[in-house]
Image (cartoon, rainbow, N blue to C red; front, side, top):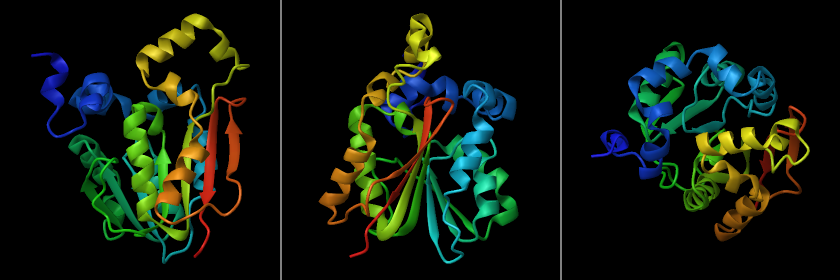
Length: 240
């Protein structure tokens, strides 16, 4: 038996195969949840990315927000602090859900947890006012991303929004990208990132929305960070 197979336990095969060491092993969950570690992984940009993402989070206290998969660090409690509505978190890994639950016990009445695969959500159609995705897509193979776009398009309501913080499109001029050994190493650690760099996120999400009889209200708002290495994308949906 290969090592990664010990971590399958209901999670997607690609997650266990390529990311058991980062998200599924108990030791890694403890290690990577330290703020200095996360900030280092994001080249010192975590604070800026957090601030820019939270600035676009839904503030309406009557809103229902879905955070699609848990994330390391203070993102989830910070999101709870700056929003007043009902929040739902789902993740395929039980260890990640337990970690997020421990961080949000102070607001347990507002926070709801469910173990779900982003490719097949158990929520009803049009359930959420905003769906927030913080550094997930680059860790999914293309087929899984396609399914996740479809599920996001299904569960977000007309007039709602989708907020995605991710790597930007291939940053050809960025000094990190231009260093070939580093680009190779990043591709080894993040095996689906090279493909994601080439993906038109707006087109993918727009196509998924059309299949659900929904549409974007104009062009997405895109804010870049770290000289174009990362981006925060706000997609507002048209009302029927």
